[in-house]
Image (cartoon, rainbow, N blue to C red):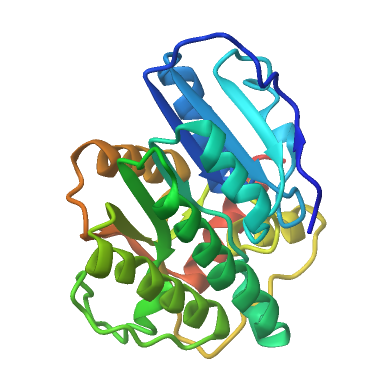
Length: 282
């Protein structure tokens, strides 16, 4: 496991009203969440735990890296020694658990890696949070609507059965069951969110919108994977972050919340719209 590296002073003598741990905070969604928390809540201490290995960059948080209420820790959620140490010294009140591997196609090639990161990492984090002397107020697990499987026109709510169709979604379902078990057995204050496809600035090209844009800007063709017809719901990243913060303040412990939009677009139409946008920009 990677060695812990702390890039902010551990002995800042500041009084914070709340300490929030964000795992995967240097990734696409995590960096937007961390930025929002740091700037909107200067009286909260925001700790970002990320190993900087998967679809992330330390540059994503340059705008807040020198803020007094921000601490970056380079480390892995699977490192039980590190994670337990954080909870022993940090008086952590809230956990947003985003650290995960998320690429659907890659999950077929390396299912065991997804199991280790998405399931084992969640188990380590849950165990440390539950055993901490300072009990957290909320453990928010950021999951995905992939757990429902293909819709075929069906509208899902939070009670819909989980029918994962790829190893990534299977790992998220398994992690959800772990999270829910801590609520069932210990009444540990968990909340689960399930998001649509999130897009926006700083997203890596493994996802469909930045991948298509990158190809189009190079005058290359866009390839649509899978069997047509395909359509997706897309949610802008700032809207997702606002939803996560709303869940933090108003969400009921033990509950699951779908986070999404009613706007659905066929992938073919999405590609055509991106072609038009790129042409207008030239």
